[in-house]
Image 1 (tube, rainbow, N blue to C red):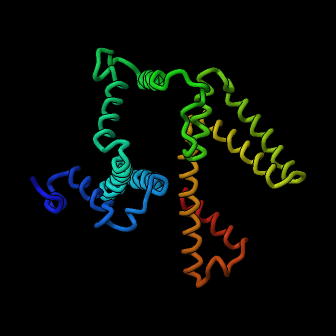
Image 2: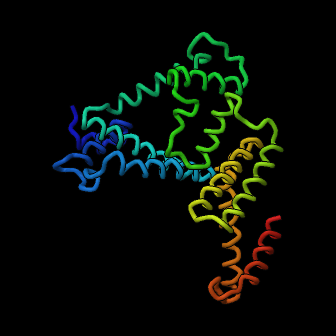
Image 3: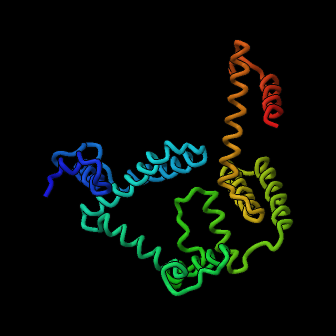
Length: 269
């Protein structure tokens, strides 16, 4: 039987090598002080961050970076499993077993006797029905939508849940009318109400905007991500142009930067 050092140095082993590395990092006597100090709460933000970095590499089609980003995400899963094993909750094998059983149970058209002759939409409905049966009878239709999801993503998930039981606007035009109403309330709040009430009205408007995206078949999170990327790209073009003129944003007027922004927009068309 190989010892820990032999396992760690053998690049051909695969997952067992990574599991052993994590065990060593968390060893109370010989491990890394930083790794030993971590717990589920402190690692969770890194887990979320690594998931976004995976998505970013895919969006940029940075395929050479993707193995490393997926590895970082896998490491976070192993980190949580190692911490759980240390306190007798579960181990990595339990994680693998649970997800394997779940995938088999949720794909009866692949691993069972159900027909594969279904549309993607029908398979999504079946998936949700299976998930609902696994959860049992919920206290609320909205139960199970993770609180820590990005706010726009959670808004859409909440709206989808409500829509399944008929609580939804039947037409997109109704959502647009609601946006007008919420916009007017926000303007009124800005002029007459407290900052806390302004924040509430702004949140209402954002929530309805997320609903509009859902009705249009647009992911609000994805649309905003693309808008962020577009803004960054165009602002960088402004900075480049100013730099070529021996200037910087700090030493330029808004009028000058607006003109360069319009030029950047034209260049992209």
